[in-house]
Length: 236
Image (cartoon, rainbow, N blue to C red; front, side, top):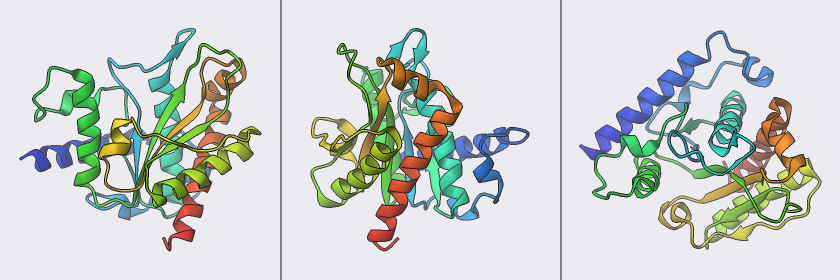
């Protein structure tokens, strides 16, 4: 029953997203080709984990919420990848909390239900990799740029390297990917997984890029480049 509920929820989620695309000019690159029919569950190359959502706004700065940035970039990345023939699904397509769909994890912690739901979805879909989108914040107002966190295994580290390198080229930074050992998803997800901190919402330059549709597209393009390079090297 747990598997059925999760798959049904993701299928409805994806169908609602496809319906919402009608009449919207989300991304010129993606409109040039129809979406690949092979995205349909239960198989996909990539699961985009859209950080936070609903009551959980994530970090914030001046009224801007992380959850909204994560979703905006995720939609662009989803369209880019599917238009390029890389089957991709998202685990959140609107502003809601994944914890609301979790009726099987017996805990009073909403955050715990959210994380376990994300992890369980990765097990219910036949994936090659998971990329989790987030935004950073720091008390140090000079901190800026993307950071990619990876699991303590080679495939994840390789995936992080390609995405970090593409984002560094896009943003003019020289950051190295980092081991994300304490993070729940990186410990629980069985497939190669990375957390992409796309920039610092606390830095004015990053904030401008993260909230600008063109900046969001450039970020999505860089992440897509890194994902494609990983697939090529690993025989995808």
